[in-house]
Length: 527
Ligand code: V55
Ligand code: FE
Image (cartoon, rainbow, N blue to C red; front, side, top):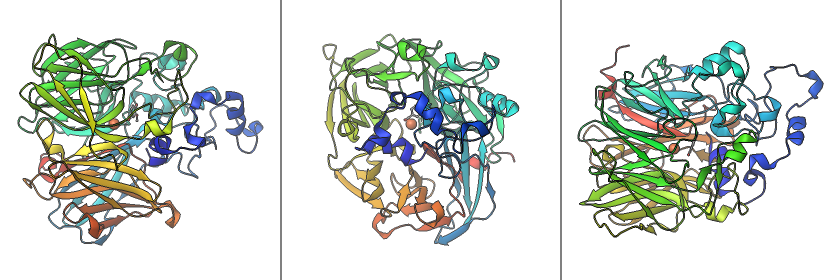
C-alpha cells in the first residue's frame, strides 16, 4: 500500500484521513461512490468510488487501485547498477480486485487483494513481473466478476456463496523459504507462489498439512544459523480465539517445533520478535470488538483501558514458561531487531503512544495524531527474574519519526547494529539508517516530489558485513504522471543519492512490505 493510505493516516494531523472510516455516514458515501449518477450503475458494475477514504477510492484514475498485472522485460536503467548484483526484490500490497457493494464501500485499504511484484536483477539487467496471488478469495471473485467478501476480517459480511473459503488476501509480506515465495496475510495460511513466474502453486499452504493454526503471521523470522523459519498464528483456533500457535519450519519446509499459548486478550499481533533463546509477543489495545463486528464493521477497535504487554517464552519449549510483562502503553507494529543476553531480552520496535491506525476506531477518546507518531523504542525484559513483571522501554532516536522498521535480515534473532526506518516528513519521505553502536542516524530523501515506499536492505555481496550494501525500494513521483522508479542507494554513501534508478514507464502497484532474495537462493529454483 502506498504511504498515502498506510502512513498518511499516521502522520496527517488534519481532518480528512484521520476520520475513522466507520465514522462517516454510509448514506453520504453511497451517493459519492457513483460518479455520474447512481442510475447508470448495474449490480456488479466495475466502478470504484471517488472518495479516497473508500475501498479502492479514486479507482485507476488517481491510484486507488492498480489491478494491472504487468511484465516488462529489460527495464530502462539509469546510473550504475552493480554488475555483480544478483537477486530479486519482491513486493506485495493490497490492490482491490473489485469494488465492494455500497454498504461495505467504507471497508479499509488493508482488505485489498494481494498483488505481488518482483524485480529480477542480474548482470546489470532488470526484468519486472507482477501477479495477483490466486487466493481462494481472488478465484471466487474472478469467476463471479464481483466482490464476494465484505468487511476487513468480518466473515459475517461475506456473500453466502463463499462460506468455507479462505478469506486470506496474501497482501502483507512475502518470504522466500524452502524454494517458495510465501505470501502472507495474518488472518489465514499463506499462499505459495513460484519465485520466478509468480504462478500460485498452493492457495492454502499448510507445510504439508502439518500447520495446526488457521492463521499465520505476515512477519516470520529466519534464523540465519539454522535456516529455520519461525512463525506464529494468532486467533489460531478460529475467529476471535485467544490461542496462539508458535512454530518453526526447517529449510526443507517441515515443521520441527510447535507450541500453543493463550493471550490475556485478543488483539492484533502483527509482528513478533525471535532471538536465539526467546520468542516475544507484543500486545497492544487494538482489540477485537464484537459489537462493532456485529454491526458489520471492521475487526479491531482501540480500547485505551487495556494494557500493553510483552509476552516472553523460551524458544523451543512447550510455552508453559510464557510470562506477560506490562509497562508504558504503546502501539508498536514492526520489530527492527531483537536479541537475548542470557535471560534478558531486548526488542526494538517502532511505535506510538496511541492508536496509529485511525481506520480502527478509538472507543474512548478522539484519535490523536501526535500520539500516533512512531519512534524507535527499545524494550528490555528481564525474563530471568521471577519477580519482574514489567518491561522497561526507552525511545532511541527522538528526533526521527517513522514506521515500517527493518534491519539487515541476515541478523534476525541475533545482536545487531544497523536498523532502518521509513520516515514521513513534510519536506519529503525518507529512509533512515541507524547505527546503534554509535547511536547515529542518517536520512536519505529525494525531496518533496517523491514518495518513497518501504525500503529493504540488500547485502553488497554474499557474506558482506552487516549493513554493507544497498537500500532498495520504490520511489513514486508526484510529477512525471505519477511514474515510479526502483532506486538503489549505497549504505556507505547515502548522501550521494541513488547509485541506480530503474525507470518504470508507469506507476507500479503499491506495497506494504518488500523482501530481497539473493541470486544464490534463486539459482536452486526450476523454471
Ligand atoms: C497491517 C497490515 C495489514 C493487516 C494488519 O501494519 C496489519 C500492518 C495489509 O494488511 O491486515
Ligand atoms: Fe507489517
